[in-house]
Length: 356
Image 1: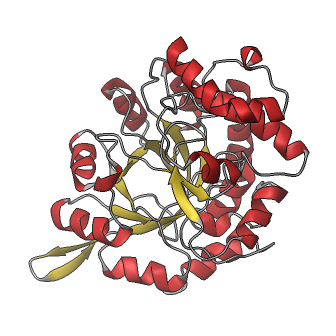
Image 2 (image 1 turned 45 degrees about the horizontal axis):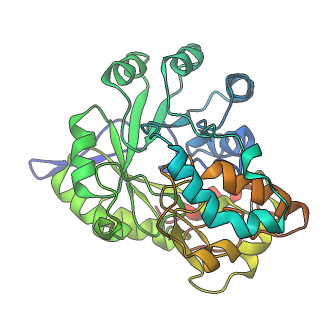
């Protein structure tokens, strides 16, 4: 990915940030992909990404082995770096009371539910696992981890990037060790990457955020959110983005592991049927509206902090999906999408980048 810098009236080409042929990152999407999607995008010339926050150590090693053995191209490992909030008995009881009618419907005993968080922030033991693989890029959601971890990762020659949803977050990242900034607009599917403020009224469109970041920050800015076509890519390049990050465009590709229910919801949705919700994890994330979002409201009071909401809702999801219902499933999808059923990730990558 080459970055252009104006110097004394002439254009100077900086070295490629990620050493990829194409300035596109496949957004890491836990639950709908494994290493095969990352591999396909990297082999196609983009930067494939592996979501790691929900992988066990054994799963992480297994998928890293596949990537390292099957490609010499750069790839990205993505981690969360949130602080795990307390989850009190009072909070749990309030949440279970909200879900009580559904527990009764599916004959779930709430006392049988485990309280363990399914999404863990990066820690030293995980860093030790990935160290031998020397990934080209490590990306983060919800800020950055401790400086010692950032420094260790960068000592391998690895580039560190993270998500910003406001200019303040982008500035903070630029001052705390990021080599590039993913400017995530409100249109993006999946979890918002905000970390300085939980106030969703501060969230901006991708276009608004790109313009502000390019104006105030010298680091490479990567546009994310609302990118579904080559025209979208071209537009963000013109606004000053050094690269794009795209997720929803790959949801229906051959290499994705998107469930049949999730695929059908994407194909069935009408225009603008996505919204932000906290119901599935405790943090705002964009997905297609379904039963639980419509009946409880997308962002109701009483949902426990991230990631504690997931254990109870997952129990409902598991049973509902056995009956071919997506009533409690997180149907992540961005606001803008073009269904590409059964198309290869490589073809999607090249189609998106043909006007860059």
